[in-house]
Image (cartoon, rainbow, N blue to C red):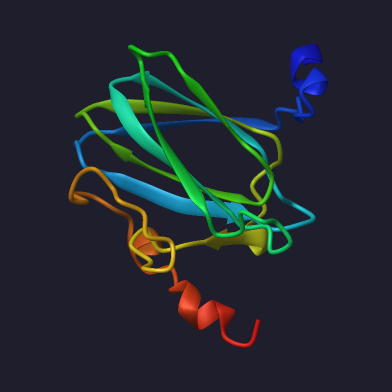
Length: 150
């Protein structure tokens, strides 16, 4: 906790989530929660490999709607810290990819939001074709329809 605090990061862990992805190409996301239930996440891939993406959803930020993508794997043992108000999603690069999330806020359905993985405004280049995805993730609205009048 002290190391997180020293770097200006929130050390709180409210819940831990485990996601297992049977098929290479499985895509999950992009998820986030709005204030006052905004959450931090610490993401690790403990089996196989994933391509992990975060998107800045803070309207006042100079990097608003910008994204970064990194490979997380059991082999490289990297972790990704996801700040509050950043959408998060990933794609399994291997069969049997296991992902562990340490989340700084409890899941609060009324504050849950999502982005389409293929939204042209975001321009995310996923490494593989999506083989599996939930209907919920497939049907998030496009940003163009959300940002009208903003």
